Length: 417
Ligand SMILES: Nc1ncnc2c1ncn2[C@@H]1O[C@H](COP(=O)(O)OP(=O)(O)OP(=O)(O)O)[C@@H](O)[C@H]1O
Ligand SMILES: [Mg+2]
Image (cartoon, rainbow, N blue to C red; front, side, top):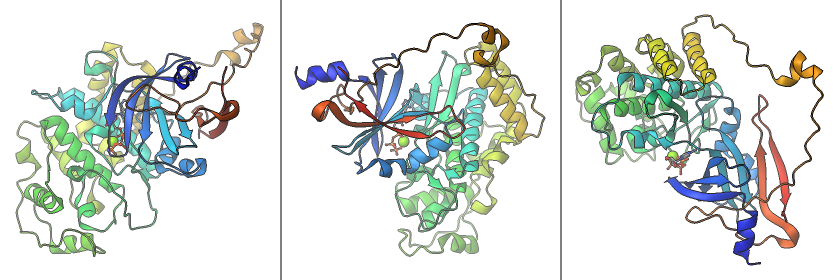
C-alpha cells in the first residue's frame, strides 16, 4: 500500500476548500471523515518543539478560558506533528469573516444588523477582558460570522484569532508584532509596547465605523501617516497627553512632531448616522486610553437602548437557536442591571425520573481511536512521515469543552488498521 493509500484510509480530515490565510497561518475547511462534521483547520506557519510549548501558546490559553463564551470561536482539537513540529488548530467552521461581509457592498447594512453584530462582538470582547486576556488584533478579518439563513437575523458572530492575545497586567513592554496598523490606537503607535486592553476598544471603534460606512476610518500608509489621520478626525491632543503616551518610546519609529490640527470630529465623517451611533464610536475612539469606554460600558450605552427590537426581529426569523438568543437578551439585561429570569435548561435525560425507570442502555464498545494526520493547507491532507511501527508522530490534544474550565488531554493515538 502506498503512503497515499494509507493516507486516504487513515486520514481523519478530508480537505474541502481553502478558507483564508493570515500572517501566521493558513485556514482550510475540512471534513471529519468519521463524523461528517465540517471544521476549519488553522495550520500554523511557525513550527514548535514540544507539546508543552504548544500548551503555553497564548492563543490556546485564551481560547481555553473563553470556551464557554457564545461569541468566541470554539477550538475543537489541537493537532501536532512531532516529527515536523507542525501545529494545526481545529475550530468550529464559520461561514465567513466580517471583511467579506462588507468588501463588495455598495449599500449600507441595515442598522439593526450592525447593532446585532456589534452587541455580539462586544459580548465576546467583554468576556475576554473579564477573563484577563486582551485580543490585540481587532479587525474585520478576525470577526467571524456563522450564517444560518439568507438574512442577517440568522447570523451568529464570534471573535476569533487570539494569536496575538496577551494577559492583562502582564509585564511591559510588549515587543512582539501586534495589530494591523489601521486599527491601532495612539498609545500603541506612540509607545514602545506600553498599552492595555483599551486598545481593543479603539480597534473595535474603527471596525464599527467600517461596518457602517463600508470603508476604513484611518487607512494609514505608515505609522506617522496613521497618527496624522487620527489627528485629522480627533484633533491633536495636548502636549501633556502625547508626552504621557510617548514615555518609554526610545525605539519608536515616530520621531517627528505633530502639526496641531483641530480635527473634523467623528460626526462629520458619518453624516447619516444617528447621534447615539456617533456617540458610542466617538467614545470608543477616545484618544486617551484612560478615558476610553470599556466593553462593559459599551453594552450599557444608549446605542443599545432599543436592542430588544433587534432581538424580536431575530426571534421572528427562528433561524438561531432560542438558547443563544436568550443568552444575548440576558447579556443585554445584565449590562443594564435588569434582573434576569433563569430558565430551566433542558435537564439531561439521565437525571429525570423517566430516565431512572428505563433500563440503562448497554455502554457502546469503545471505538478504536483514529489516526490524526498532519493537514496540508494547499492540498488534500497527507501523512508527512509514515508512522513508524504502527504509531504516528501526530499527537492529538483532545479539547474538552464540557467542564467549566476545559482541560487538555494528551492522547497518543495508534495507527488504525
Ligand atoms: N473557524 C473559522 N471558520 C471559517 N473561517 C475561518 C475560521 N478561522 C479563520 N478563518 C478565516 O481564515 C482567516 C485567517 O485566520 P486567522 O485570522 O485565525 O489567521 P492569522 O494568520 O492568525 O491571521 P492574522 O494575519 O490576522 O494574524 C480569517 O480571517 C478567516 O477569513
Ligand atoms: Mg486573523
